[in-house]
Structure formats: structure tokens, C-alpha cells
Length: 268
Image (tube, rainbow, N blue to C red; front, side, top):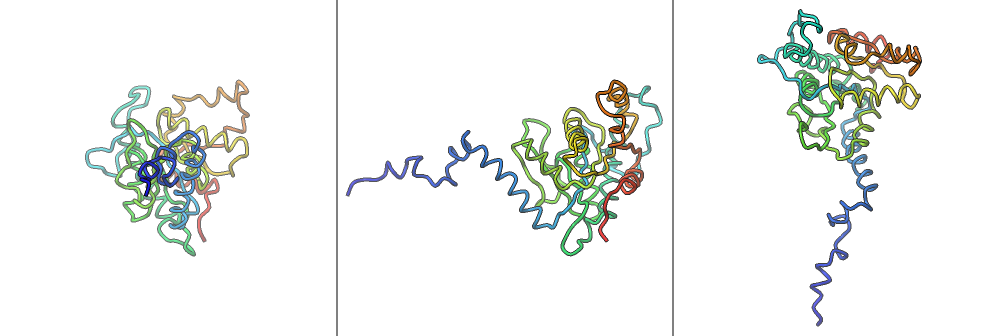
């Protein structure tokens, strides 16, 4: 009987789903894109997640030594102390407190008819993302980590719910999942990545591609220094009314008040 070993070893003979060279090739990019959408979608549905409160912010912010939740606001102005570790500690603690408050009051802790509302969702990494996931974990609530494969800075933090901790290759699909269930957005200080995510949502809101949701920028002194939104309106790059697409807050409690006052839906 002729030997068919060469046929068995041929890449053409491998099952398509088990052929890494094929699955990771250029021609199947669309399939991989679909898989990244569907895998996360199935896990989120299994947990009954119908809406999220998304928290963005820098991966480079670190907690204080005691990891407390009551660190005071730095007393010096940002002009005197432009980028201090005390600011970073305060931002971390406030993001953690936001995770606690939203999880306790927003519906993530107590499913209604099997549905969880306003579940904390982050980019899944360290810094502000870790803080928000940690706040949810503090009160026993689930939270989501939408991680992205990057050469540096991005490893999953230890506080997102393991079954809701995802890894994406494509930024576009990660952004889609961050946006599609978002009932609100809270944006802490950050750099290029945070700006990218903030302006993505602002653009979707400005163009009507996304329902009206409350957007809160935390620490106006930071945002007013790094971006002059008023100049954009004065120079007619945006409409004056576009400045109403977001609000500012300076404490975790104020974040919650602004979210509720600007239409965050709470389960009945």
C-alpha cells in the first residue's frame, strides 16, 4: 500500500481551525476580527452584562503605600506642582472609590432578572484601570478588563473578574466592546491612550453614532491644562454646544452625582 505520510504532514491537509499558519495569515484577518468580537460577547452575555460604566486613565499611576481610599486632595495648585506622585496617589484612590461607588449603587452587585447593569469596565491594565477594577472587587462586584496585547505596560491587573478579563489583538475591536455597552464614561488623567479613548467616545457622541451618555472628566485642573476645549469652540473647530458633551468632577462622590444627574440609568 502506498505510503501517505507526506499527505498527512501537508499543511493543506490540516483542519482549518487547527492550522495556525492559516488562521494567523493575512487572508483570515476578517475571521480573527469576528472571533475577537464573538468570544468576548459570549462571556459578557453569560454574565448578564447589559451595561457598563467605563473608566479610562493612565496605566502609569501608582497607588500609595497604604492603598487607602481617603487620600486628601493635594494642597498645592497644579501650577506649583505640575505632576507629583501625590497627584498620582490621589487619582488612584479616587478611581478606586469610583469603582466602589458605581458597583454598590449602579446595579452590578445585584442582578435584576439575571441582568447586571453599570458594571465597571476598564482597559484591564495597571494604574487607573487597576484602581477602578480594585474598587469593584472591594465590594464583591464583578468588573471587566478589556486588555490589549502590547510590548510594554499592558498586563492584566489582579482585580478584574477572571471570567471577564479579555485580551485583544485589534484596538478597533477592543474599542468597540468598550463602547457598545457603555452607559457612562469616567476619564481620569492620562496620556495618548487616554486621549485616544476619550476623543473616540466624544466623536461618536458628537456625530450621533452613540446614544447620549454622561461623560465625566476627572480633575478639571489637569484637563484644562492639557487641552483647551474652549479654544476649539472659539475657533469654530467644534460647536459651543459640544462643550456640553462632558462634565468635570473633582471627587468620587461628585462623579456619581454627575453621572446620575446627567442620565445614568439605574435598574428598577
